[in-house]
Amino acid sequence: MKSQSGLFDVAIIGGGVVGCAVARRFALDGARVLLLERASDILSGASKANSALLHTGFDAPTGSLELACMQAGYREYCEIRERMNLPLLETGAMVVAWNEADLVRLDGIKAQARANGVDDVHLMEPDEALTREPHLAKSLRGALLVPGEHVIDPWSAPLAYLKQAVAHGAEVLCNAEVLSGHLNAGVWTLETPRGAVQAKAVINCAGLFGDEVETRLLGQSDFTILPRKGQFVVFDKAASALLTSIILPVPNERTKGVVLARTIFGNVLVGPTAEEQLDRNRTDVRQEALRELVAKAVEMVPALADVPVTAIYAGLRPATDRKEYRVSSKPDQRWITLGGIRSTGLTAALGIARHAASLHAGFGESGFRPVADPVWPFMPNLAEHCERDWQADGHGEIVCHCELVTRREIEQALEGPLAAGDVGGLKRRTRAGMGRCQGFYCQARIAALTEGKFAEPLAVEKADD
Image (tube, rainbow, N blue to C red):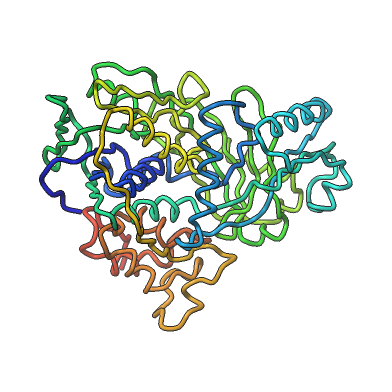
């Protein structure tokens, strides 16, 4: 989207799920909003790879900002999702104890859940757990059922948030890394490769680069990002018949552990790993770690040994030296940082956005006029359990046969103010190339349909004559 000149009320740095939610909240509140994203499309950083769970906050630190934002975000998602056609796969979750030590800890997790206001949890004896999930390994010792934990679409939701923001005047600039900036007389001037922009306030939602942005513009940062890589394995759609609930481990101090869950797209995933690294861009996968994930999944659900793996991927979480969110407000510098938002960010994003708006109110701004009758963008459905475009009339050809993606879906994703900016963005908007063949058969057709659309065209290898 081409930037217009003038003074914005708020410049948001980072187009991940939190940045998209913050843009929506401020636009609905009546602010003039600019979102700056360093990549060629939104959701290109930490937000592109997660487990896509909608969390109740049952195991979050009691009284924490994280818990408050998660539960506010959960409520708002459920309130708005039907208007935006955002899917919800109601699965529930089971925290499974596989040994005596874990079994002892279930009482404490139950107590914490109830302290957090999640009152519908209950302990399950092995027989009850296996009745609910008969394909689980018979070695389980017990479980805690958390009925409110569910699965959502991790990409359509933030895209919908930003579409609503744009519908109410927000602007988006991609390929616009913030290189430098200064505050003068209450106005920030930010320099980007797309030119300089001005705003009365800055909200740092830069995820993996949040500390670098803060240091670049403020001279120092209150935290340091310590990237934590999480690798995932995705089983073929046949695996979904083996599982109903999200299977959670008893967590430890460092990580929530490996999760086994269905996806909104009809597969089953297992992950993530928790691997510390310094590189903020490298998301390579290690075969040894992937083998360990498959083994862990088979240990929990033995029948998965007969189901092929469809995909593998890795993502980086913007961890810091502390577990809590790193949120700060500096009214004298017209600055808010929303940092250290890790795996719960997808659930918490709408709540974080409301918290950011309350922090911004402390700047003394007035004069915003909230939108009285919001526009509600209606998102294309990508969820396997709901009706897809290929089942409707007039969709044109099927471009991706593994995921049943239609030409109409591809063309719609390439149009409008938030059109896909690269191949990854197209995948996240349509599922094209995400199936069994991982784009082997549809790549050439997608390349033809996207010709001239991307700065970096999709490369297609030609067979030797």
